[in-house]
Image (cartoon, rainbow, N blue to C red):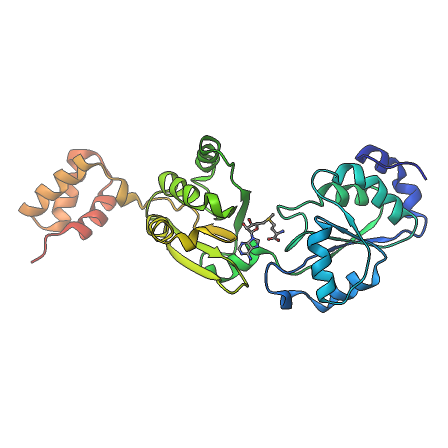
Amino acid sequence: MCALSDFEVCAVTAPEALNSVVGTLYVVATPIGNLDDISARALKVLHDVPLIAAEDTRHSVRLLQHFGIATPLAACHEHNERDQGGRFLTHLLAGADLALISDAGTPLISDPGYHLVRQARAAGIAVVPVPGACALIAALSAAGLPSDRFVFEGFLPAKAVGRRARLERVKEEPRTLIFYEAPHRILECLRDLEAVFGAERPALLARELTKTFETMKGLPLAQLRAFVEADSNQQRGECVVVVAGWSAPEEADVLSSEVLRVLDLLLKEMPLKRAAALAAQITGVGKNLLYQAALTRQPEV
Ligand code: SAM
C-alpha cells in the first residue's frame, strides 16, 4: 500500500479503492457539556469500530470510559492531521472502519478533521456523519432570532484590528450571524460588535450550553455588552454569540434633517396632506415618502 500523505496521492488511489472492500469513516458528534446528549448511534459506532481518531486522546479517553467503551484511540489534531492522514487512510483502505471525534460537539466545526475527510472522500472511502451536538446550532435553535438563513463566522481574529476588519466586512449581512468566542475575549468581542454593528442590533449570548451554569441572554448589543461588563461570571466558560442580520433602514428614516425641518414648519401651518405636497415641491423628495414621514411627526393635539 502506498503512503498516502496528501490530497493528490489519495486522488490517484481513488478508482482502485472504489473496487475493493474499504472501511468507512464515521464522523461522530460528541456532547458539548451534558453527557446525556450523546446519541445511541454514536455510542454503537464508537464501540464497534476498531480505532477512533481523536483530537485529544487524554480528553476523549474519559468520555469513552464513562460509557464503558474500550476502543483504542489515535491522535488526530490540527498539528498532525495532514501527516497522520496517510496512516488513517491506510487503515481504511485495508478494510477497517474508523471513527473521528473531536473534544466536543461536531468534528470539523471549528475543530480538526477537514483534511482527513477530504482525503478519505478523494480516495473513494465512504464518509458517514453521525450527527449530534453542535454549539452553534444549539444556540441558534433557542435564540429567537431569524433561523431560516444564517452565517457561521467561527472564531473572530484574536487581535482588535483584524477583528474589527472582519466585522466591517459582515456588518451589512442580512442573515443572522453566529460567532464562537473564547471567554477571555468575550468582552472585547462584544465591544467591537457594538461599535461596528450599532448599539441597537439584537443579539444573544449563549454561555455554557447544556452545562450547570447555562445562560441564554438576549438583548440589544449595547445592553448585552453592559450586562457582561457588570458581571465577571459572564466572562467565564464557553460562549456563542448570535447577532441579528442587518436590516435596511426604512426610507422615511433616512430623510435629511433639512427636509424634516421644512416638513415640520409646514405641518405647523397647514393640514398634513397639503404640508407633505408642499414639502415635496420645495425639497424634491417624493410626496408619498414625505406623507409617511408626516404621519409620524404630527404634533400632539
Ligand atoms: N465542534 C464544536 C461544535 O460542534 O460546536 C466547536 C468546537 S470549538 C473548538 C469550541 C467553541 O465552541 C467554544 O470556544 C465556544 O465558542 C463553542 N462551544 C463549545 N461548547 C460550548 C458550550 N457548551 N456552550 C457554549 N459554547 C460552546
